[in-house]
Amino acid sequence: MSQKLEQLAAQAANGNLNRRDFMRRAGAIGIALPFAGALFSPSAMADTPKKGGTLVLGLAGGATTDSLDPALALAQVAGMILSAWGNTLVAIAAEDGSAQPELAESWEATPDAKSWTFNIRQGVKFHNGQEMTAEDVAKTLQRHSGEETKSAALGIMRGIESVTATDKYKVVIQLKSGNADLPYLMTDYHLVIQPNGGMDNPTAAIGTGPYKLDTNEPGVRFLGKKFADHWDKNAGHFDAVEIRVLNDQTARMAALRSGQVNAANLLDPKTAKLMSRLPNITIENTPGKAHYLFLMHTDKAPFDNKELRKAMKYAINREEMVERILHGYGSVGNDIPINKAYSLFSDDIEQIKYDPAKAAEHYKKSGHTGPVTLDVSDVAFPGAVDAALLYQQQAKKAGIDLQINRLPSDGYWSNVWNKKPFCASYTGGRATQDLHYSIFYSSTADWNDTKWKRPEFDELLTQAQVELDTAKRTALYRKMAVMLQDDGGAIIPMFNDYIDGLTGNVKGFVKHPLGSMSNNKIISKCWLA
Image 1 (cartoon, rainbow, N blue to C red):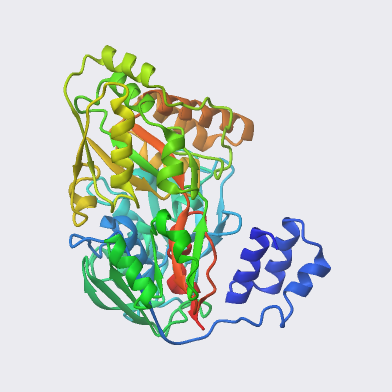
Image 2 (cartoon, rainbow, N blue to C red):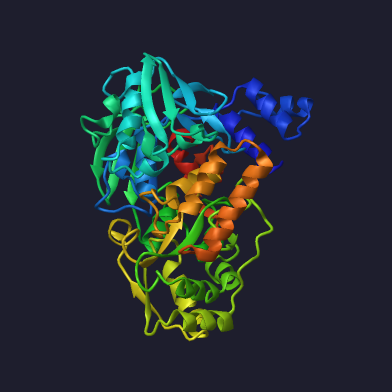
């Protein structure tokens, strides 16, 4: 059975697809209708969700500085907690990356894609018993849009001119210029809908999600209890979900092996294959859009020097990184945050190759002398310290003295990432090229973690947003990619698979190319056998 068909079957088994939608999507991927009908038969779909039990997750990517305010959410633990107690207007389908209704039942746009109307799902209750209305939706989007906000979503919300609740269940979003991808922007995990938009108490964790907040110890533990009035009866099969922050790789793997947790994220590729041999462990590796990076702040010395940035790019051996750090669980990067997993990707862009002589040439032109310091922690990505040390050896052949500053896991995402001028990081990718570029590379993006700001890039991004001709839009994205590769501050040596580990009693897992742990949907869609 093909991977796409397996995903469809799993979604149908989870109750996420009715027969009509199953047949339609099966036909779209070339499955004959009689065969698809047999697959949807009661016998084939016998593995139906079982209610009850507590799902325990052991996750890297949490810190004592984590906040329950969606606007301030960073890294995987915060995102998983948001998916426990909240929902966004739109979701991304695992099988084809399409935008799917969540709290919005449907949407439509004017021909110029400047005005969008979202029809809000009726009868949805917040955890406090209050019904969700269009006013709550509008206030949520307004809170993340205002220039005074500290929201990490501001970068993608700046194109919004106004958000208005036109009646109890209808919201109109007016854009400054057309954007055909607006529904995808509404999938950003920071935009979970809160009562009155979270303006009263953004950290209350009152939302529409399948689990109500019970206990929250930032950087340690989160416990959510089943919300009996959750709007989606096909989600939230557990009585409770517990998230334990286990940033240490060894501790996380030990907890999975011993059964103390039902699932763990960010498995070290070195041990993933060994763990797959254990009788009660399943390894789920998912290729997608995620990538590991070394980020240079282009507004700070010495990385404000383009010649030095080019030297650092030629001084890294990407093929060796994939082989020795990812152990085959990934692919070579090209200092572009977009790969073939995205639509409209141009695969004819020249690959940057490891070239110590060329690196030495650009390094000499830069005029820089002395060491270059790279801040790193294994919480940045599995094997990040080993990758940095390997990079150090590779750069040495170009005459570059790369010094590695190893830092603790706790506080890395709040004190190092987006603050230190050269550090290790990872990015999970986004639904579309526009969304990824808007969040991380637009001059106005708060998460512009290379501080690279080019008006000509912003202009191309704006043109691509309103361009409906596929060939012209592809050409625009290609220009943007080449510009980033040549001048940007991101060294992207590899695209990683998401590697999750599950105990054998976790059922209903669907691989999602947008994120590990089924793009954080494991807690709402899976169950315990």
